[in-house]
Each structure stands twice: as structure tokens, then as C-alpha cells.
Image 1 (cartoon, rainbow, N blue to C red):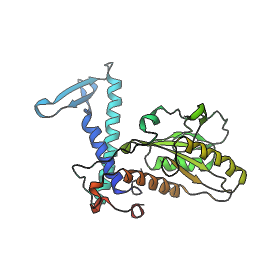
Image 2 (cartoon, one colour):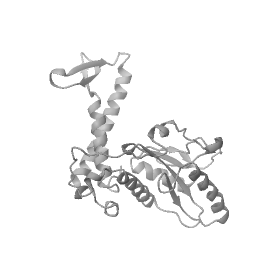
Image 3 (cartoon, rainbow, N blue to C red):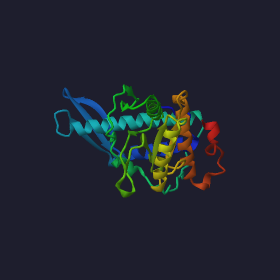
Image 4 (cartoon, one colour):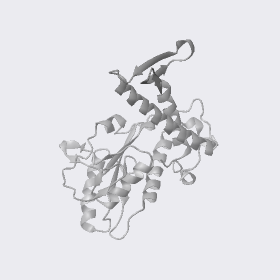
Length: 267
């Protein structure tokens, strides 16, 4: 996960979200009881602390194992963000907040998107870092850039637009701290007139359905003889996310120097 490309506000907001999620969850530990593997679940504190022990031969053990894995994953991610906070000499204001973004597509809409929904037969051997079999080297670079940034993503999700028309943007990913869903299109023949004409129509349809470039849609372009590197794509996506997060950041902290570090210096 590459955090250095994200602005201070994004790092702080992710810490706030992760702390909130972990504080709402029971805590988990593994152990042994009379030679049987167990998972111990702890909730509450002090006199209200409750301990539950789930043995490996219990019907609830598999779910407890999944909860343990999720708890450990979130704790590891929080540690990474807290380390980044420390490197930047940042603290989290007690009343830090983000405003509602009012986006057309939120994270709940993203959850409903069906991945890999394009019926076009793909015979290429390109695979991104998520494991998706993608159609081009450019798409592979985009997918791997998203993965390197620690983002969830779906490849070619199915969008149903006005009139029942279907579109499958190359990727879609959520930014949960601002309850937004974004789309990414890689256009690898930006020097081909026929390709430009085709994609002009695609972009027009996106915009007629409220999916706007620079707000909801990230465009990554290449040509027959040139393609951006994975690092360049990562910086483009991170800049876009930073701008989206800062646009819904509460104005109360505009003069708080540690939170207003510019996007340019953050990337």
C-alpha cells in the first residue's frame, strides 16, 4: 500500500474511519483450551467486559475465524496509517469531520455493481494485481496501480444507464471515507481518429447520466507509441482522490496548517 501519494486530510480521515470501525467490533485472540484450538472474543471494557470462547469444533468457529481475520486486517491497515501520521507529524483533531459529498454514485451503489460483466471474449494473457484477466497492457497498469494504492476495485462493472443501455467502464473503486464511487477508463489509442470518435460518444453518454470527468470519472490515456507508467497512473489517481476528499473537508480547519498541505507537495 502506497500512502505517500495521499494528502494529509485523506490519511487522517482513513485513521478516523478505521478507529471507528475497530472500536465498534469485538476484539479477537487465538488460543488453546484443553488441547483444542479456540478463538476468544472480547467486547466491552472494565466491569462490562464480556469474554466469549469459540472452540474449533463449534458451528460458530468458521464465522469467528472470518471475524478474526477481518479484525487483524483492519488493525494492520490502521497501524500503517498511524505510522504515516507519525512520519508527517500529524495529530487527529477531536472534532475532525467531512461533509456530505452529494455524489451520484455512493459506496452502496458500488457494492451492487457486477464485476467482469463484459461478454466480449478476452484471449489476452494480461492479469492485473487483483488477478483480473484484462484486455490490454494499459488496463493491467491501471488495475495494478489501484491495487498498489490499497484500493478495492471491480473490473468492467456493469452500469445500467438511461434507457436501459449498458456500459462497462474499465474499473470502479469506492472511497468509503467520503461515501463516493469512482470510475476509471483507459483510452490507449488517443492518436487514432476513429477511436477518438467512438470514445467521444461514450463520454457524452456518461455525462448525460451524471458521470462527469474530473468528478466521477478518471481518464487515463495512451497512444500507439506511448503509455504512462504504473507510478504515473498511481499519482494521477491519488491526486484525483485527494482533490475529492479535500472538496468535502469541513471548512473549520482551513487555517490548520498540518491539514492544508498542498496536493502538489503531498504527491
